[in-house]
Length: 66
Image (cartoon, rainbow, N blue to C red):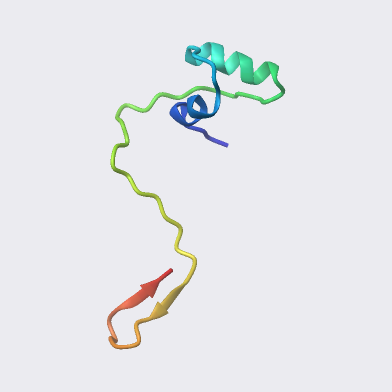
């Protein structure tokens, strides 16, 4: 499973470096395989899961997603 460092820091009261946080997580029973850095930041990104797609009731060329 992948987890963002910012997300982990929101849920841990510790102010640790990436390597130290990785060691603490490993010592607490969680396995950290690797730490990856992204070459860019993801600001303004919205993630969604489409659970269902139906035909729009009033248009042949449109669909409604939930």
